[in-house]
Image 1 (tube, rainbow, N blue to C red):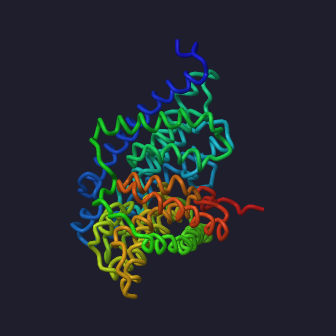
Image 2 (tube, helix red, strand yellow):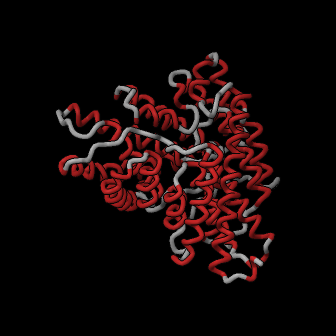
Image 3 (spheres, helix red, strand yellow):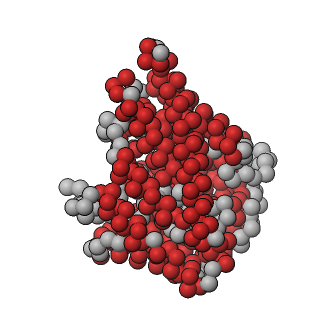
Length: 428
């Protein structure tokens, strides 16, 4: 009966199913991950930083490296026994839609997701959400392939990616816009409807499973005055420079590990040891940066602590991603943006300016840094507004993210999704 419907109605109904499937996939991943983190380091509900603080120093040093051999084997199996390339984890579903036919390597994807579970559960400084989105997109691709040519596979994968992001971050609008902006040119506007439906349904199922709530809740921000808004908008070009600098920093890390020419799993072990060594001073380098974002939104850290943790976190993220460890950089980017905004607030306070509170600058930094690295300004603005519940700030977020994106694109034309994998040959 489904296949007898007209294409638009069929796509909407399928999108609803993909939304349910995506939410369940994300929740399954989260459940397995939390169980692994509890078993590995005693972390409760994904809170790695408190767990790291409780470990003996020598254990804290070694834990991020112990998963290296297992991750290396999984990536070796994923890429094929005769391949010397490391994971192209971040671009799998994006390439499948933007330049492919929507077919994902299911076997390789599963192995990479397993590798990501190991990396994150042992304190790797990457996001867990990248694997969640990939798992949701893979589930959609699998269903689409079973249906044959009746369903458009690229649209199915797009719905899966939107559903995964909506479930992972509790951001249904940003999930839909993520697909529209990141995959611009590969999805026509008429196909956006199913993507929106998939994201909203996924969000609804997630609420039913884990309850409502924002990712980073904060108190309602008072209405900004004209002078406050102008100062915050003036922050945008600086964010554009910072976003481009972060992209170059990640590229430098990849090139550095590539030049070492170490066989698997040695780069992964080395990257883990760097994270472990940094965590001896600041345990906050473990994980995706969630706890650090919360600390800055709550204004609990003095600027000296923010600056120190930011420097260490940048080194940890570079060591983890540069070594080829699979994982997302969405949430680490949000952490960097929050720290950047908090430091700007401190600088303004030192100059005698008493305007918007520090948390406002922290969330503005999150939005603009995300825009500067993804080159998706509308998605970045909506995502941070949904994660914090500060929809009133969209009037500032949107123009700031647009300006940030324009500056970042001028300095670094490729977004984070265009970065080459560590061992890829340079483009000619």
